[in-house]
Image (cartoon, one colour):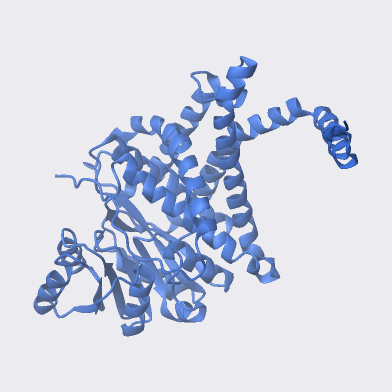
Length: 449
């Protein structure tokens, strides 16, 4: 009786398998593994020094020359009207403090437009109460949760100003921030947006302390470096100023993008508008202080980054978009790095089980000179940033005392950021185009008593 393996098409499959098996065995797997291992370790190390160099250049080129510091005010030739937009969703616990803080802006000509986006708590009642007491406040009520992008667009269209400043409903804007942001719009007509300098309000837990260092040594340094090298990945969602003409030129915020701040940043820069960073525009914000809260936040940020990379891929091929090419390339390399790290993490148990050897790439995370180099680099980065950023912290803020906690940042980066990046990437690929991005309630951490 003829065996099934005697059929010609079965024999053909067997021959193909043997051919591919021989070819795979001929590939330089050990050499490839060595290259990938070096990439996993040296890529974040290299980028740390790239950000430090860019931050130092920014400081000597712009920041030191313009002066400023905590509580300082710039000298402006004019004071055009400004509309401060405050989108709110279930901000009953925070919005009163936010609005009352805004009423102390050291700027003579501004209004406050608070948008209640279908809140289910007492946010609307608080806003109406404040509006009765203070004529600067206007309240816009959206009966249904439409998302932050729709709330901002509605307020922008109803505003009477060319210059708009957007902050979150739980943020505290420094009294001198408006004047410092207006300065950029007056000095350069090509500036479409100005991103401010967020600071962490809640510093009670380990995650809170690590994020204090992260926003100064990592986020602040990256903003400075990106401004030095050309394009900024995103304005800060909690504090950013916009030129209304620029927003109208690009169609305002997109309602179907999960991170409206990243999306509007790319739209403006692809249209030829510039984005500046203003370190004097301080804004104190609440951040997650639990692992689940931090995971959701970072996954959302990662998803937003992947969404803009997918949406604006074709527009990047235009010659006028060449300024965005290095930024896009860096985003692609970062995603590749995250996928490779994940693959090594998943393969490590199998390699140890079947080959009885540890993964060399992951061994760099163990207590040896490579992991020490990462920690030392992190401390150097924070030290450089602290020397630049100290002028924006009060003497009793204790920023220097949190220097030690930054040694833990590489652990947070490797084990949370990598996973959140992959999770956000999957969500971005699965999301349907045009699906409305509405508000969700996030972990706001614990307020410092």
